[in-house]
Length: 125
Image (cartoon, one colour):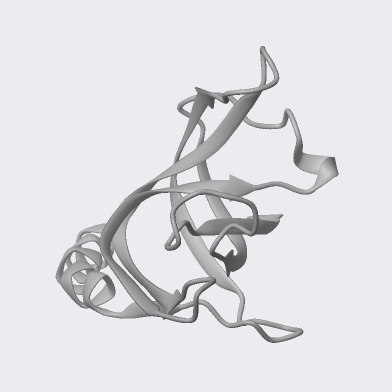
């Protein structure tokens, strides 16, 4: 049974990578499930702050509109910054394997590249 499941996942990966996830600016955007490994990186200010990233187990494609209204498309995204609710701050360690449900947000409002995308975590599965 496990061999069949592994083969199905292996065959489905190119299809999953080809589908583009869309950033939707609606009151209730679709929930997305991502899996991967946590990567903690130092943030610029303030000293000692960290940013939490998810190294994805399968690359994804993300598309949407930048602040200036121009469309963008990022193919083969293999790492994405996480936006965590207060109850999950400090809950992750580097190299933790996780499955997360949430939504794509982007681009950032204050500075950063116009195609900067964040995954807002709603739930750990």
